[in-house]
Length: 168
Image 1: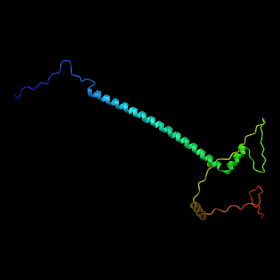
Image 2 (image 1 turned 90 degrees about the horizontal axis):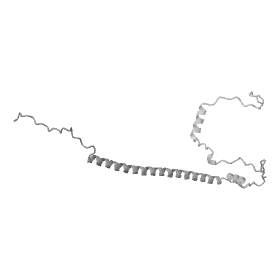
Image 3 (image 1 turned 90 degrees about the vertical axis):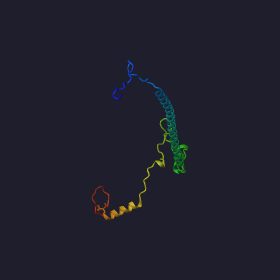
Image 4 (image 1 turned 135 degrees about the vertical axis):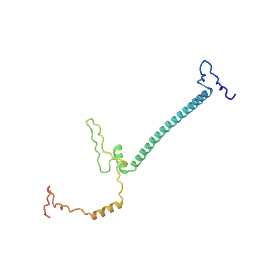
């Protein structure tokens, strides 16, 4: 009994090996869950992108309004400058200072010519950064150690030539 024949595995039907169905219940549930998640994330992503575009539009509006506020503050500072007020009174209202005479230059059609002179905005002027005192002090120390070479004496008279005249 011990050395008997080995057990034989049951044979498949003559049709061939059994196939599993392509879409099982688990796979269908997995596909359904993934579709629900995709729809959920897509709507959330759309809301996120809408909010981002709205935030960018609001930031642009804030920047525009800040620029407007800066322009108005600059205009306010201009009006506190007496020279600007005088210039505007002369230009807009045709005022003149006491003792002055006003002349209006007319073109060939009898229309007044526009003035091209205008006061500039003080904020538009380039401001030099103040130099530290120790920088100038160190330059004087360096200059004391290396004095410049003697230059030609200045001309006693200006006659158009580069040679000194020697007259004094």
